[in-house]
Length: 380
Ligand code: PMP
Ligand code: GLN
Image (cartoon, rainbow, N blue to C red):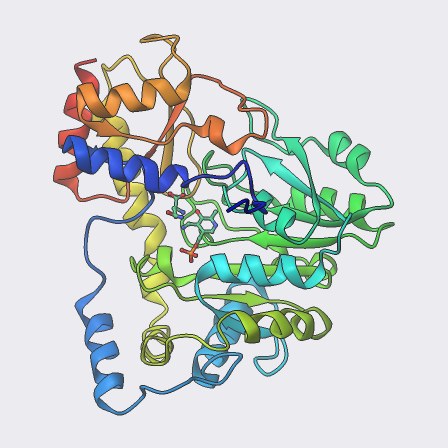
């Protein structure tokens, strides 16, 4: 059969590949980003309770009302942004579906979408499936800051969307209020929309705050803001996220969402709604992950890996140029096979495979896992 692929250059994702290799080699898996510990037992019990209470049929298409109300309350409390749960908040099957639905809703064939590289792996393929054209803009190195001049230069008559992701996977970069002002100034004379992937909104370190699009009224008015409960509640396997957007954008988003999944897992939505009442659960997250980051950093002291700054997310970039000049992909595979630690080569997040001899390590792991992995890394 001669099947013309819609994504000819795409294979299995780097996350599937490295996790499989880690399993085959019995390596410690610091590649794909997921915790190796369980979510709060109370949250698990809530899911069971809502199942037993009969919440097992389709949820409303935009999401369980109680959950949308809690998301609205959280967003108002944290960012001063009042989103209407009826018309501006949609619960999705993870952030991934929110990204897919929002891109599909607004990108027409030939539209250009600016992506900051390194870019999370699903962005460009989703843009291409809608006939859009990804336009890469590299983050400056080593500061990982946005090149405002470069952004301005890439905006043209075909630009539909700017795709952002802060706190940034894989660099750990975060935005400042000055960045939001600079962004608003660049976009002000244009009709360009923003899709802001903020799944790590609650994982920001060193006393910094998360500055997302919701915090800026002007940017909020042209943005889809995507988040996920996966990172916040240690539940990457539950696949529930959400999208905040002005009513006009949400209307278009929901047209797509209703035909991808229609609605999202009902008992889990109820459970998250109940769990969200306790603000400490997410307010304590920065300290929880900062402790893990700092432990991992201290365990790496004396190794030949050189850590880069990490201000948010649960990933740490390590420069291995003192150990090897192999390309990132080759080194990542050898590290897994010969030294028993799996990591992600960030070059896969660049269209031209920019290779800086860095690897991304996930530190959302139990202390013993981090100790065992660091002991192996110190020996190299
Ligand atoms: N965006 C980024 C930047 C991510 O790192 C991830 C993976 N956790 C996702 C989106 C996907 O989130 P979800 O698992 O909720 O679909
Ligand atoms: N977001 C996770 C990461 O960056 C991976 C999610 C996935 O496997 N698609 O590691």
